[in-house]
Length: 337
Ligand SMILES: *Cc1c(COP(=O)(O)O)cnc(C)c1O
Image (cartoon, rainbow, N blue to C red; front, side, top):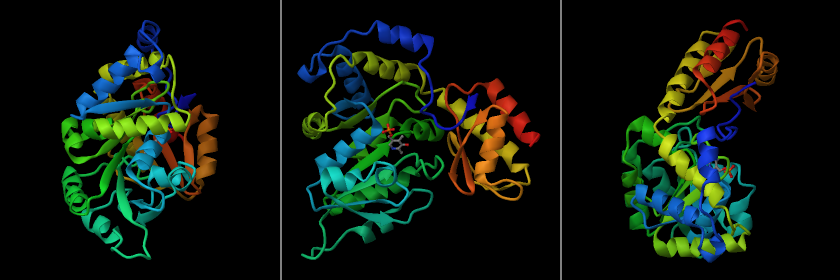
């Protein structure tokens, strides 16, 4: 099977497994796992931030950030397509007791005017706005990237209103590679960033939350409360270190391949439109002889897995286990549909 369902389906490479096996480990709740300590330090340093925190999932890093930046009863501003709102099981309410102000952005991206308009006035009737959370790249937005100028404009607004600014950077390296950005610039803008190692970077498990030393101390306490304090998890952190060393630059191949698949899809009568491919995600709107479900079924019969995101949209995600020849085969299969 050629698996385009998600960039989370990757298996560790032989090189990654060998590196994991040789990792020095210790009890991380005691702060004694050298591999986790390295991963946290390396990730924070890449973004010019002070400290990092290794967690089992991106949901946990996001939820810890929200918990650490807010008080119960506060309000969080985010786009309506945000992962923190759509796909984290209502965790903003459950874990942090916060309400959300949803903005109607463009493919998951919001601008400074929208953020400003979303901030509640000083009024006893209103929840206190304390956090703005952005997502780059946007998952539901089909891998869309922010223009960096928009971050600067939003930062001016959050500074003026003393709001914390979090970035869900599950696929941040896809944006950085695509736009040739400096990671350090992100550290200058955001108070916290969550980065997934188990998406396109190809690690089996793990995300890192980065921020200031005091912020990470707070998040580390909440991680224990959430049950995320792990012991000899350095074997997993080692996979992350390996991924950061070996699997970042190659994301450009995924972006190029996604473009090629999108061009093949665009030739078909049953494809009504395709979101402009910015990174590794292709979302096509399906009509005519197929529904999203029946197209997914037809592809599956030929050995290609994709996901029906909505009744009319099919999603393909590129990652390091999709080879050039997998792409060629998929293009041939699509041509013949
Ligand atoms: C995948 C993803 C996450 C985290 O997901 P986990 O499965 O919990 O690791 C967070 N944000 C975005 C945008 C994602 O795509």
